[in-house]
Length: 307
Length: 107
Image 1: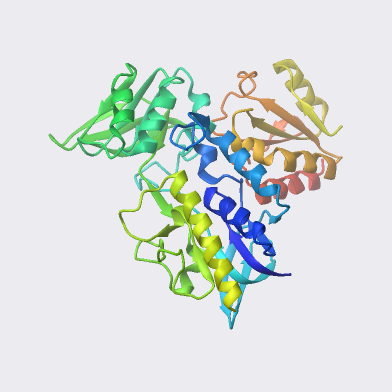
Image 2: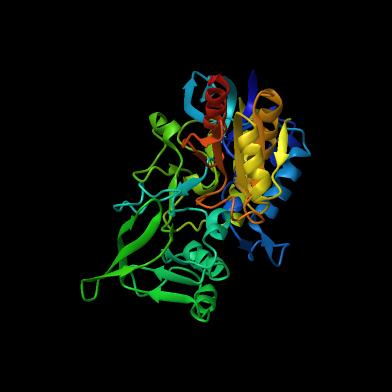
């Protein structure tokens, strides 16, 4: 099967790109390995997306997906393993052994949560270590938990868990937060969130599941034990771009380098959303992903017209 | 029997003990990955009629869900005993592979 455009990933960027592409009557396919909506599905409340004063992440994901599917787009739930370009056509190979051909491609595969890289993290993954508080948080209701990080997602996770857990330790390596002041203030006013600043989580321990963590205070270099049943690492994201490394489009941190029009250095190949980066100053928000999805689609349309 | 919603701890124990090959989906309404894989789980229940497929809502049945620490979690039982080979997360390929393994088991 050959397409005008294949979109890899169905998060906000990919879904928006698909809407624009279908409205331009492109023959278009979405490849998504998991759940449409991407990280929206792991977001409790979205309070900064225009049109919704406050909306649950999964609900916004559903609305965006519904909107995209209105255009009767081809959709396959498959993981992309390799993206190649042969002459003027791309070949996209998937985990199901399929190969799709396309004249253009938008990579909107997003990013996955970074691991802490400490002892016990992998051992207790899904046994108390979770990267999705809104999926797993309820299982630790009434218990004490730890959230690690200083950005928006760490603060949001701490606030979400404060309504579920008896106590939330927010462990952050610095004294200041990267997150917006509003959400930091909200967390500071929440009595069962305990701030552990200038502190580094060094080890996760337990039996069958997580029982405790070791935290190093960097100001006095002392280690403390905290008895917690869950750890939620929220220290940022790592782009999901391994399938495209051979094309030479990634920067040293594996983000796909794009220009203002979302094009890469490979003609016909575009990128949008969390996987892509114009500069290190770029913010990663739903609105920016959506905007890039639209720009990438329009650039693909322009490219196909010139072919 | 295709897909059964478990209503109590007793109901769960009866289904596990009365059926040789059982797959259990531990999930919750508010868990997006759980909802995402639910149609596929239903398809599996129809595709493998020799197995019993159960669904446990962890919010309502905390006693049955003891030990579940991530959602969704799929457990597999053969002749009333857990095979201790849980699938954690909405991994369709892994889930179907273990469903096939369970189907192939003989007494």
